[in-house]
Length: 230
Image 1 (tube, rainbow, N blue to C red):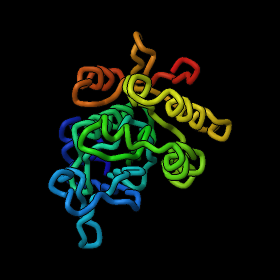
Image 2: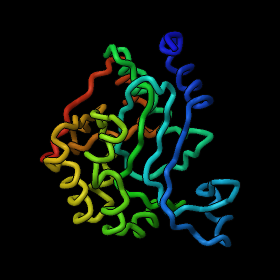
Image 3: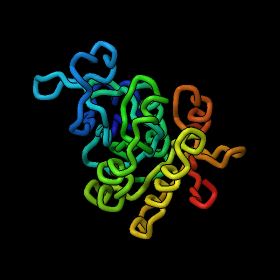
Image 4: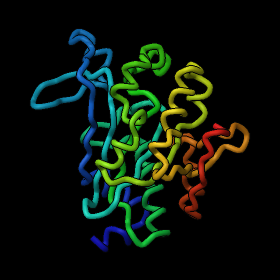
């Protein structure tokens, strides 16, 4: 595995995209079969059966099972599947690879969580479908201490961008912050790869923010997150 960490960043991302074990965890509720054409990007195959899950609870990518994992909290569930990463998650891999240069223990994988679990082709429609009680019961970020202890993760990069504050209902966004800042999570270290100086929010690693991801990769220093300022 040592040669894996000597690759260029682009070659490493390509290796992870082609070879890593990718495991999306979905909720039990599905969109109706007749809607599959409209929801094509959301359809998955599980146990030789096509389904269109309404919710994605987490997404795990493992490229070296002997090493530690890191968690990201992003905005909404992406269209990444068990075969291929999307642009945002490729940027998350870049961040992980850059961090490998700063520590002896190499990062061998990442787990992606989101501010909400609803999946929909249109983001505004997904937001309308958010149900706080469902999220509290099913979204791992509402029970992070238990979730991360099972996966042996102690470091979380919050990278949800400006959208949660701008687009989510204030009650829901406050519920997220309260849950994450709970004293049960006191042993978890929360970081951002970049803080937006104008909004105070942690920058998202979407392809639109490639400039910031690339800047971080040149000087991979994580910033501490203050929930009082979010």
